[in-house]
Amino acid sequence: MKKLTACFIAAIAILSLHCHKKIDETATNPALEGYWKLKDTRVSPGTPVIDWTPAPSDDLYVEFAGNNVFKSNAFFFAGYNRYQVVNDSLVQLSAGSGNPLSVQYQFPESLLQLNPTCIEECSYRFKR
View 1 (cartoon, rainbow, N blue to C red):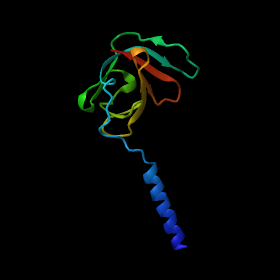
View 2: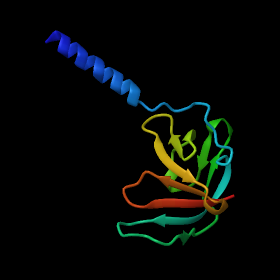
View 3: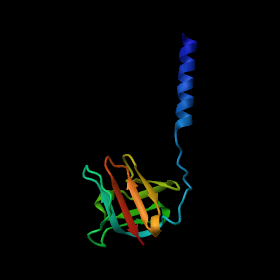
View 4: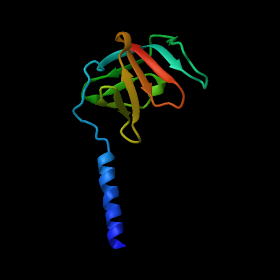
């Protein structure tokens, strides 16, 4: 019984180490870096949303600056001040404590599209 328990614990330990996704601390995406103004939103209040809605003003922005500094005055990214590129389509935003926010990103039509983890549709497109 002790052998079986030891084997089970070893198997769990190996699986958890194998399944843990390591973030590449040196990963960057030069296309992501810079100052971006909000252009369009697609946010669902619980019903399907097909079309993009133009941003009400040019005032909202995100900035992916050097040294992994993140800046934004957009309420949906409030409190986040650091970013880490995970791969060529995922970035994590953090505020120093608490859980990071995973955000999918892509570059359709020379825009930056950010898709944070949401229950319903929430997508934001930014222009340089």
